[in-house]
Image (cartoon, rainbow, N blue to C red; front, side, top):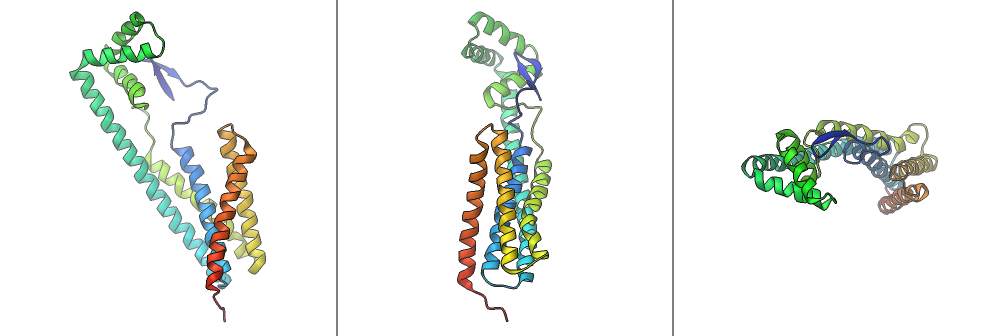
Length: 241
């Protein structure tokens, strides 16, 4: 991703990860949400004593409904964010045109706050303001923290959320197509725990945090969710004829 320093494009340092995009977040949340919600749903239905066919149906329905909801929510979220950013950029564009002197002074003050000497800051700000596109990019980055030329795609985020949610949600349903009863319950939980640990490890590694803690945190979330839904399901104690 190209960034700007005093109006001059520069490439992102290869040693740094991109942390501003929404696609990685959509993928991680999609898999995690699909996994936790559907393991909990499947175990809750299984705890109620319903037939295995009902558990399978609930798992598939939960995966489809959850994926649709996740994708729609992601699309609305990213679209709203982009609309807000675009509005702020339009305001900044008008300010640069109407209040050029004030915006130049403001940019010089920003550079001074970064440790640049006042004379050099004023010269750099004046140089940037002579180029409208560069001026808008620099002001947007310094004041809004965004690059006006690089906004996340709502459709890509929605599609990725849908795919990742379905992937995570279908994992705990697989055992119910090859087994039934306590064996399928145990297999669903084991698959869920392993997958949750892997998701946590990816999060921890990406954030350069303790991988074991990130994995344990995801596993604990899943186990607590399963415990709650299983308890609720068992209270219904559906009798199967």
